[in-house]
Amino acid sequence: MQVSSSDLISAPLPFERRVVMSLAALYTFRMFGLFLLLPVLALYGTQYAGHTPFLLGVALGAYGASQALLQIPFGMLSDRIGRKPIIFFGLIVFIIGSLVAAQAHSVYELILGRVLQGGGAISGVVMALLTDLTSEENRTKAMATIGASIGVSFSVAMVVGPLVASWGGVGSIFWITAALGVIGILILALLVPKVQHVPRRKQEAGAVPSLLWQTLKHPELMRLNVGIFSLHFVLMANFMVLPQILEQQLHIPRNHHGMLYFPLLVVAFAVMLPFVIIAEKRRKIKPVFLGAIGLLAVMELALMIAPPNYYFTIAALFFFFVAFNLLEATLPSMVSKIAPAGAKGTATGIYSTSQVIGVSAGGAVGGWLLQHYGMTAVFALAAFFTLIWLAAAWSMKPPRFLASVLIPLRHHDAQVIAEKLRAVEGVAEVLIVASENTAYLKVDQRLVDRKALHAIVAE
Image (cartoon, rainbow, N blue to C red):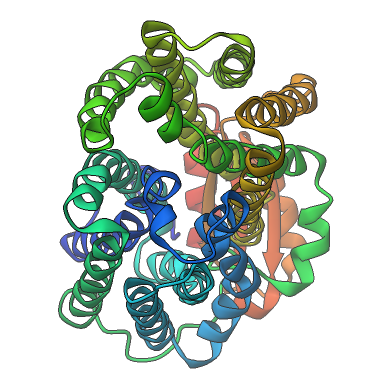
């Protein structure tokens, strides 16, 4: 960002609001289609020839495997030929995968369709386009908006998925998913602003190959990558089992599952929100974070050892949603805070890849355990992963609440500029990228000497 004369934070411009709203809508429609399958496949997947719990688990997580392989390469390719062409191509692949899955008669055709859906790996490219078209000072708000839209799409899909599946089977979900992909193309064509030419690559617009190893071995980021892998592994493994528990042990008709999820998710969100505020506003993110992991672990252990009971299971499911939503909200914030100056895009790319690997592994391993060892084994493994995560996170350093700042440079002596910037009170990190004529800073907004920054920019 170019530091303004008033503050380090400014209100979004109308152009940026349009960018954020259109990209959030595109993201929401695509993720909604993917989430619809989560609460229903374990129950309705028996309609496919050759089905087994393991193969249904593979189908549930298959889109994560192809996303993990293609997400970072798609981001790098978009640097060369543009963001919108790659997003358009990804949506086309996503629609083709949805159509293949909609017409599938065997579990193998279903898996192929899911792999193709994940092959439209545009999440990183959408974030890169957001970075291109928004100013640094408004980017955190923009990413928070997209994160909130994903949370809303997850909650709505958990309610709508069982209703759609009870009406038209799993195939109807994929027809809806294909239609949502078409809507995504219309949003891209009509609402997302045109980029006349690909801007010069910025360090934080996506994964940078030269920073991959350095970011991968960063100890604090490594804990968060293990965390997001574990969280989505547990989510996918649980939903190989939970729908069956609701139907077979608690005798809740499958077409009523959505009506059960709805109040649980609404109340869980209301309970979770104050803790997010405490974590961010009062800078208590570590205790809130560890508490949420601990709650998740307790719920997995409880589901593993407790006998079937309606009220106990509903309570456990409720606290699971509280913990999951709280962790889903705090993890990206912590990645942003911990990522070194200039490496946010790389850190986010690795984090997102860890997430979809967890999706793929959770579905496949959860299905395999369910097939060979039963429901208790699934919860036991989920509890094990969560406890390992809690142990890894226990000694983490509390993240510093630092904001990212970009300063365009005209001075040729990068070392002199870097020394001046490091000497400014409240500046924690400085990275000079000579090829971009840009300085990347991490600053404490409570302490930073704004006047000194303005003076350096004025030079």
